[in-house]
Length: 119
Image (tube, rainbow, N blue to C red; front, side, top):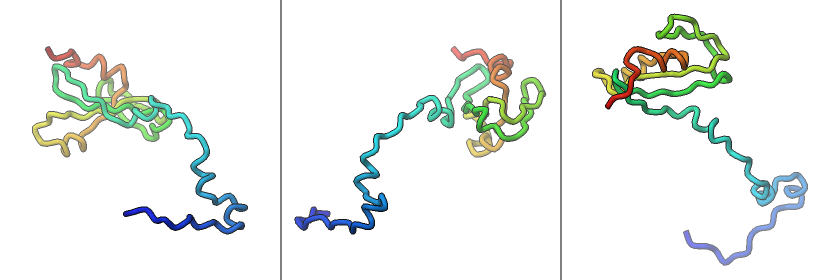
C-alpha cells in the first residue's frame, strides 16, 4: 500500500497522559534473550546404533507430572530435569512415533544399550 502524504493524526491528550502512546511502547529497550532457555523446547536429532531419535530436554520448571523411566524403571518425580525421546525412523510413521514418546533420565538415556554412535 502506498504511503500517504497526509500528516499523522495526533493522539488526544488523555491517551498520552494515560501512557498509551505507541511510540513510548516501542522506545523501551528489548530484554536480553536467554538462548539456552529458548533452545530447550526444540528437539535435537541424534543418530545412534539403535536408530534415529528426536530428543527434547524438559527443564525442572516444566516437569509437572510423574513419569516412569524405561531405562531404570524408576519414577521421574515432578521438578526433575529429564528427556523426552521418540524414534524418527519408526516403521509405523512419525505420528505413531511421537505418540509413543518416552520420558528418560538424562543419564539412563546416555548409557542405554544401543546408545553407541553409528559409523
